[in-house]
Structure formats: structure tokens, C-alpha cells
Image (cartoon, rainbow, N blue to C red; front, side):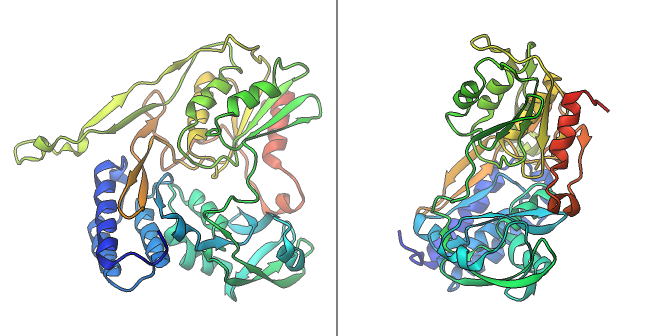
Length: 416
């Protein structure tokens, strides 16, 4: 379906269905502080107007962001996604300031030379804090303020495909200059800076640094097993989940990886999902909003098909750690194999339900509430590390990975 083919009636149907599906299926209504009914009225009025499909897409994103659900997402048809793009630049927030981590070296980037570790000071002449606050943040779904800002920074250059942006940069040495870039990589395109599902390095002293970027990859367990057939010469292991974003599927893969790092059974998270009972809505009956179907934690046993690692293990987390990676954090803590270091996770995990709406549009919602086996919830807060590590701009610009360094200290025997 091509862009801008939706009629006002089509748009209104999509808004109503999204509103109703979220109201019936979203698992965290007690944490929604927005007026959902007023949001429906406002979006119906916009749908009746002359908004383009891309503008309508942005409006649905703003509506969904009111839920505060990091797993929520609007699914637009491919033709609409092809009109939304960003430059091939990877950004990251450090102390709420956006820095360029990497860029794809295409012809334009070779001319613009955005320079890694450069800080973005302004976009289109607007100071970056104002740009993010007014133009980006309202459309970002996330469960914690830190995760929301991280995601907003990652998407801050997104817009109409083919349009140009002028950014003001502060280079690592302190000099400032401008650069022009084009929104060239559409949402429907493969992101050229996507990290492999599994990356690994051997640090001094035989410590394995394993970066897990996608537990949803169907080959992730096989990749881990191939990288570590017997843990020969491995003195310690650091599992780095800091760049693992959300997504559906993958929690079982995380448990299978952890099952090679322990000799004892461990518990997974428990979960519950809303159980709607219309009869409970009568005047003489309790409100059905409090009804739940609850599932207890599973017990995962150590794997017997491969050798298991018995040395020290540590896990790194950040506000970018979400989805099945947070289930792995919960299981890791239950397994008592070592500490979680870094920053609190994104607080966004649970079973994701993809729901078709109309005309090729859809919505994705979180429909379960996950918790530790004792019932302690972490959605909206994140899994807090036992050993917090604050990332500063000073350390970042100096090339110091302080969380990784602290994990190496723990592995080497400094357990303070």
C-alpha cells in the first residue's frame, strides 16, 4: 500500500482499534497517568483532518508513548516506513548529552566527516536539549526516564526521507563546526550499523568479554556454544547486555546460555496477564481490572550436553538493556552466579502481542507483568545493579569503559 492512501475514516478506525486494544490488553494500566479518553478524542480529531500518513504515524507514536511501555510499537505499512529515515549515524547519550558512536562510511559521510565521539550541540540551529524535548521525546515509548532519553537520542535525527539536516558538533578536541547530513536510511531498510547478535573478545588474564546484542537471533545459543565448546583457558566471563534492545522472543535462549554457567538449577521470572471478566463489572460485583492469570517461575536446570563454566561471572547492564535481556538479568540474579554491574536496565520486558488494526497498520503491546520469584516487579524501574557504575562524559571521551573495568576488577578477585 502506498503512502497517503488512508481516508479519514480509515485513520479513525485505526485510532479507535489501537485505543481499544491497548485498553483491553496492556498489562500496566495502574501506571498510566495520561487521560486515555482525552487522547482518543484528540487523535480522532487529527485523523479527520488532512494529515499525511507519515504525520498520522507520528501521531500514533505519540498516543502509544502515553502508556510508558518500552515494548509498545506502532507497525506502519512498508510504504510509510520507507518515508521515515535517519542518517547512518549511531548516537548515544552520556550524561544526557548525545555523542556520535559510529557512522557508515558512505559517500556523504566521507564528506560530512561527522567524527566519532563528537557531541551534537544543535540540530537545524535548535539547541539539542530543546530539539529532543519538543520534537522527539513525545513520540518515544519507554518505561523509565533514562531509557526514554536514550531512545530519543538514538532517534533524534529521524524524519522525512531525503531531507537534509544541519548539525552543530563539538569535536573531541573542543573545536566546533557544522555538518550537513541526509536522512537516507529508512525504517524499512536494514540498519547498516547493526551489531552482530554475539560478539566476543579475550581480555588480559583470560577473561572472556561476551557481548550479547540479540537473544532473539535463532542462532544465538549455537553461536555461544561454538565460541565456548569447553571454556578452555577461560578464567572469568563478563556477559555484556548493555546494547541489547527490546524485541519479542529470546528469553529461553538467554536461559540456555546461563544454564552453561551454573551447576545448580535456577528460577526464572514469574508473570501474570490481565484476565477480563465482564460479569465483574456489575454494580454488585468487583471491578474486573484486578483479575489476573498468574504463572509461577520456571526452574531451569544446568545443561548436561556441554561443559559448564565454574569460574567467576559478571553481567553488565544499562538503560538500553531491555526485553529478554532483562529476563536474563532476573535469572542471573536468581542463579547467584555473580553481580550485575553498571546502570539500571530499561524496565521493559514481558510477553509482546502484535495486533493487526486496519489497512496494513498494527500495534505491539506488552500483555504480561514480569517479576522476580518473590513478586517484586521491575517494570518501570529496571533491574538495579548490585555494583552501580556511573558513566561520565570525562571517562567516555578518554576512552575508558568504567563498567567493563569494574567488572574486570571483580573477576580478578577485587569483590568490594
